[in-house]
Image (cartoon, rainbow, N blue to C red; front, side, top):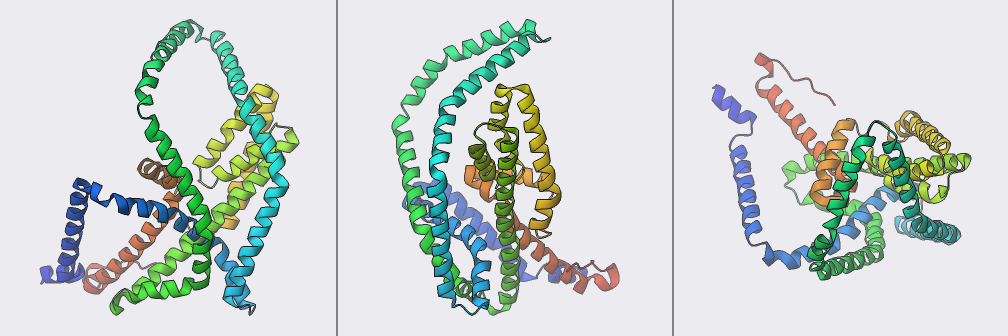
Length: 382
């Protein structure tokens, strides 16, 4: 009786079918690793299609609430999409035309002077090390570094043989970037216009028995991922604006460019702001110790405002993820998929979490059904 009840709990024969299915998937993946060269054309196709699709989905989650609002104001959805895309494109174009000259001048100046900042920083650190308790070890460390640098020509010679491949990769990356930028607005248009149809189409692909579950999972994913993307971009923008104001107040050079860098990198939680402060800190240290102190004060103030007022009100309670979990997810996704993994790691984790949480919820329901009466009930959280 116990065994039969346990088999019913885990799904009966269906459970073994699922195990067999995943075994077949594993075998398929193993075979693929042995003959992956056959699928190279498919990899090229996917690598070309996926980036604009990802960009379109990110933009979809940003713009879809606005299109829904326009639809509630009795503007046909297709006209709402056209108005939104044209309006956003016009605003973006105007912003670029207005700010491009100053940004270009700052970037050129920063690129030319940043090596000098690094050189001055190195000299400052050298003087500090020589005058500190590490002074006796400075010569040994310097000799060790110079020995490694002497091996640099040999290493360069080793990598030169891969130069043509590197050029090819760069050209491929540039081509894919251009293709993504050109094609993603068209994908975005149809997502905004026919998003609900796509959703119904996906649900109908599943057997009728599982359509309610599929609909609930898609709804939860839409809420979690959409809220995260919209919230994180808004938070990153606010951080960039606050830092720009702070940099202007303390008189830090290249305030606009450094603020843009901070806004872009802050899209990645925790790691992004840490990376963003590095160039600003180098410039501040070289400028003067007092400037560095002012920079630290500005940074602490912005982080305080972001952590206590901006994020809690914008992000809300939709994605409760422990900071340690976020860091681990970013590290793993970065090692697996590079920069793309770092950017999309948290939304990907959110999708996995939604599916896992829903499956666990269904398991608790089944447990209460078969064991709850005599073994105690799971607490069901809605």
